[in-house]
Each structure stands twice: as C-alpha cells, then as structure tokens.
Image (cartoon, rainbow, N blue to C red):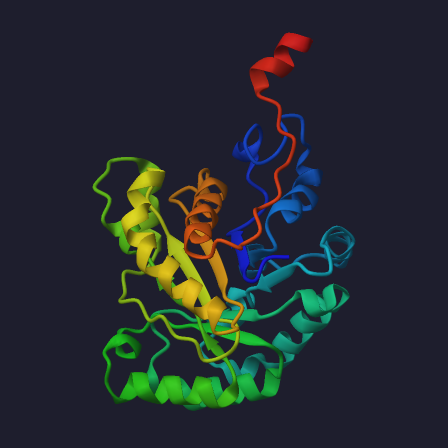
Length: 285
C-alpha cells in the first residue's frame, strides 16, 4: 500500500492503450485497470456534468476500497454568483455520490478567478453547511499576494480543517510551443504562484507538466522533496500529474513515483499491468 495518493486527471484516456492499458482494453475496463496502478483520480468529469445514478453505481463496483475519487463539485455550484443559494444542490450532489462511501475524499471546490476576498464569509458558510471532507482551489490574485486577504483565507481553511489545493503550472508556462494542445492548456490553466500548504493530513498537489517528460524533472524536484517530507511527517499527500493533453499524464505520474523512490527507498513500486505491444498483437492475428 502506498503511503501517499498518486493519480491523473481522469482514467478515460484512449491514448493510454498500449502503455498503461492493454491495447485490447475496452473503455468500460479503463477504471478497473487504472485503479490497479493508481490509487486516486481527479473527479474532473463531475465538474462538467453530474453522473447518472447508474454510472455512480458502476464506479462503486469498480473502485477498490482504498481508492480515492476527488469529485469536483459541479461548476453550476462552484461558479455560482451565490454559494448560499447552492446549499440544496450541493447536498443533492453529495447524496448522488453516496454509493462511493469514503472513497469520495476529499470533495473539491474549484472556485473561479472572480471569487475574491469579499466572499470569504460565503465560502466559510458553504464549508460549514456541506460538512464533508473538502479541499478548495482558489484563483483570485488577492489570495496569492501574501497580504491580509490571503492570510484570512488560510486562517479560515485551517480553522475549518479544509485543505487548500496547490496548482503548479510553472512547467506548462515554461513551454514555448505552437502545439495546439500546449496552447489550449496555457489558455485554460491559471498562471499563479504556488502555495505548498498542508493544513490537514492530506495536502493536495496538482502539477501541470510539459509534453516532454524529462523537461519536467527540474520543476518536479522541489515537489519530490516536499512530498517526501510530508510522508515522513506522517501525512498522506495527494499528487496529481497532468500534461497538456494528458496523453502522457500516466507516464509522468509513474516518473514522479520513480523519482520519489530515490528519496524514499522503501517506497513500494507501482503495480504494472501486462501490456503487450500493439505490433506483437498484430503479428498474432
């Protein structure tokens, strides 16, 4: 069992066939295969659309008990102009995911850049009302200015036992490229200072990498030391690796684990699936 949670933005990447997944894997098999290697995933899918009850039940049947699904609250809730008005919708969302039990931990509230310091009381009330394991990602510049607004946010989250998600996009924005995937990711992801907070036992890191795997090493190095330190302190951090189109996200996650193992020699290896090269499969037909 890993002493930390490691994963990717999703499990449903067809390009992972022949790498993470067997070339013959069906999309319906992806979650079970993914959960054999990684022990957590970002719940991006719930940010854009709420799943059906049948889908949640299928997830519950495929996710191992040790697995953690960081379900994002739907953007209709997180990006609302009034979180007070979203209490019922948030409770309904939690009820929808109830079949997953403790595997949904923490929920994620990803707030838009327009959600600023003047709404902190609203956020505090929402956290208290929801009363579930929660991590919050903020994007308003005032929360990164090292002033009273940021200190007020941090005090509130610490007092509520809520983690502050750290998104590190420096590797992505160091990339000068005309690749449409890179340009799209740079247009969508925020470019903000990093905040390696640990307000709970479960620090949260989202690392947005470059498409060249080795070019991420210098950017990952400080996080490898930080994550190793958190583990040695007895914390259990969550680490999610992205690449611009996420085709190489699983490879980057495995690279992170390999390099972390150099700092923590007793770290268990990731499980490996039996993946036959596509050329060999074709030769058998």
